[in-house]
Image 1 (cartoon, rainbow, N blue to C red):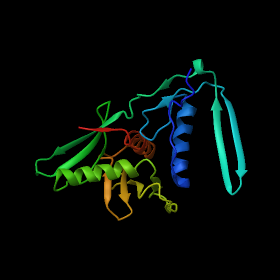
Image 2 (image 1 turned 90 degrees about the vertical axis):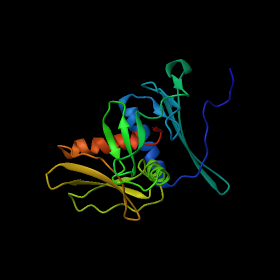
Image 3 (image 1 turned 90 degrees about the horizontal axis):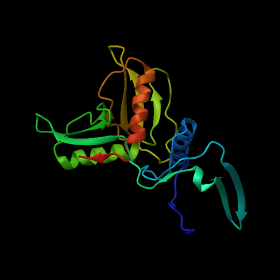
Length: 213
């Protein structure tokens, strides 16, 4: 049996970026779902109920390392190196006003996000779409029905999800870039704050690996 890793990556991440990654793993573990190893969620592994868990903190010279490891018999966890990265797809299209737009459509047929505005060209629409793909997963959520202040941004995202009630008492979300522009919204009103949160969480989960058609 080869000792070559099934998947391996090494990069520098901010604390906020690390927190986003570990929260994703924690949600999947708590639900008993396969956990993603990569950002695109195309490499996943099923973790058994009781894996061995090891945390090691050590110092070598001027370098500190914190290693977190789970281990279990190979037959107890299935690895998928070609998992579907998303349960949603980006539709890129031209509207009746000859402006370019995108929408994120879940496999169940629901539109879970859209571009909020039309773009003058397909290229600009693609740039807007990629900005959402980059910034949505790590964006923190501010509930505007409370006097919440955004947490300090450490670089994982240049955008913030704003959760609010509209004039019809429907709950909505929008994703606002640090430059003030709204780069995505839910496209609909929800009957409760909880349903609006579920909607934006679906975007956070599915936006990274969604294909564009």
